[in-house]
Image (cartoon, rainbow, N blue to C red; front, side, top):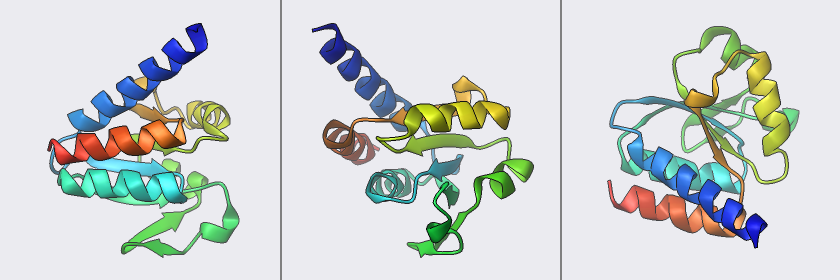
Length: 130
């Protein structure tokens, strides 16, 4: 029961945080998979400036998703410290959060999307309300 409640709380926080991103606000999406693509859709519908994707999977590096390049995390966070970061990964979100702390990215800049089915629906709803 508590786990379900905590899951819904995290999902609602992600939805609220994404809804708060304004037009022109710089955002990095950490996760170049399916959730990352959904996040991109929601952010584009709000007019956000998606700087890049980043991913720990080297196979994605250099690829483009909707014209936005996927870069290696060390490269991204060596130079980009002002953007919000949306972690679009269900399986490794806690490890990514710790990794981002190593890059000195504060929790205030993070949005964690960590539940696939609910996240997709909630993110899309946040994008539609923009």
